[in-house]
Length: 337
Image 1 (cartoon, rainbow, N blue to C red):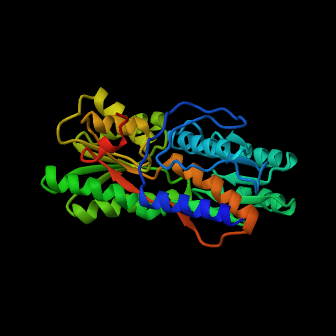
Image 2 (image 1 turned 60 degrees about the vertical axis):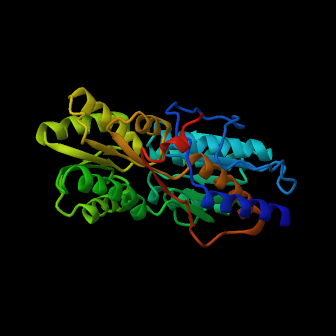
């Protein structure tokens, strides 16, 4: 018991002390057991944990077309492999009914822990209660579901504020404090509204004369490209684009490049520090910044939190994920040499 608590404590300390990200691969991960070997910025020397030699964890994510959730899932699998746990990853594909069915299936398989990154938190409340009644621990990740035993997340407003401040500083430094700005949000998911509000406030904090001319829902590359094409038609003078994730912002990048709007003073920024975003920042492209929340390391933290909840019971305090801005100034830290 003491050994496991020490391991979990040290991992959390490591995450807080060094929040760096290798980013996401963008490749879809199908439902599978076990874990793939992957490199993390938060490696530990932990071997199999004798306290939970056969812990079974089922994790249903929002959508594995999102590179962030690919990285998160890889971290979960890697840590599960390190500890000898049985890990099953389910792709919710942005369908709340699929998540409900997946959780029902996890209950039937008698998982020890179910982890949920919910698509629709309200619709999952009854099935979460059913899992709890079956004696299964439930952990919420990213967005909270009523009744979970622990909750791991990034503070949404502060997350958006972080990229907003970088974008606002760009406007102040490169555009004389004035620019037409587009925000790629995702109001369909309630907590993301706070993230978008943070982006807006961060921009206006550093560039109060900037003008927000467009808000478009875009949380995937495809949606980001379509949204940006529409924005450029209506507002051809847009110079700054900030997205609630890298996936949508990367789609916007493609649209801007196709429209030959990639000037030296154009700014695109997102969130999640995926590999694609980091590569573009490293190329000195118009993709200027992202915010690292170490999805791979967070996946490992999810597994350690699951083990702690099984051993010690529910964790009342929200477990916050650290964040760090990635720009041309520090992107070299994220590129494998």
